[in-house]
Amino acid sequence: MKNEYLLLTPGPLSTSETVREAMLKDWCTWDDDYNKDIVEVIRTKLTRLATKQAGYTSVLMQGSGTASVEATIGSAITPKGKLLVVDNGAYGARIAQIADYLNIETHVIAPGEISRPNLDEIASILEQDIAITHVAIVHCETTTGMLNPIEALIKLAKQHDKTVILDAMSSFGGIPMDIGELGIDFMISSANKCIQGVPGFGFVVAKQSELEKCQGQGRSLSLDLYDQWHCMEVNHGKWRFTSPTHTVRAFYQALLELEQEGGIEARFNRYQTNQKTLVEGMRSLGFRTLLNDDLHSPIITSFYSPEHSDYQFKAFYNRLKEQGFVIYPGKVSNADCFRIGNIGDVYPSDIERLISAVKNAMYWELA
Ligand SMILES: *Cc1c(COP(=O)(O)O)cnc(C)c1O
Image 1: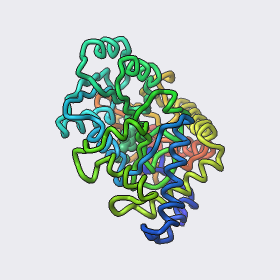
Image 2: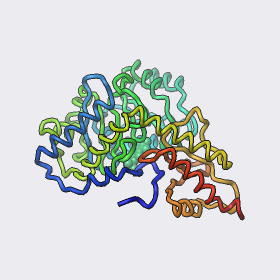
Image 3: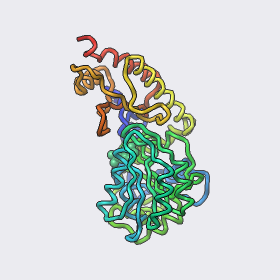
């Protein structure tokens, strides 16, 4: 089955036909050919993709990416702990919201949606607020496409001996990083982002000694990160509760395809070319990006909506969809934007076709 349109949305995204075909078989969740040969291989591959350092492990968790964020926040922080959260977009705000639901004390730094956090401010907060035990930040803020300065921020957090949680949902697999070298304790991502799988589960790659400290700390049974990990670890890839077998099998295929492409570095190069082609093409049609180029990730780009009185997102969206492209509405609170993602089974030639389609769809210019 071919797709009728390309999803230029950062999750779910366009997957390859072979990833989708991998879902056409049913799997038995107590057999080795599922647990040992699929789940365990995935866990090992994920850990290796995340770091060359020893002492890291991974755990898969049912649900969308947010469930894995919630499992991590709810399991890693004790009742006496306090979380410093950088909120410069909807996903940073969501981490703070999760902490709020779980009655975890937070210190939120909100520099606004189009700015990076001020490191001097964070340094002084870490010095003054000694109750803080954990620091959480989003790597690529998918709200805008902002790439946050995680290296410098994590360095600061580590100087103050804090546990670091990174939401790398929309960057892991698409942007090279070594979480061990960076000093990350918990890194969260999901199946349907840069690994190019289908939705259904998330995963956490964690420093094993930190994950082991989570024993007995989970605030919810189904989102107990330690218990989930422990079950997989002891029972060779067995999930505690029904595992999303078809999604997991498709993810395994997606990991093989990442290797065939040449690994994360090669995928990063493709995404970067996609994003540059997108921005150049859109600028040539008169569109402006929300963020300055130096703040940008190669994942998703926010563009200001045209100011023409005839412009309506829905009509623009429909005209693009008719031509085989699906884009995203904007998500920032104080500017009228739309977003175009360039991750997934998407290539520079697709982006070139998109630019022609956008030109055709600019009905307000013709009016
Ligand atoms: C996609 C995404 C999430 C998780 O979203 P879900 O809808 O729960 O899958 C979290 N953080 C970031 C930065 C994301 O891009």
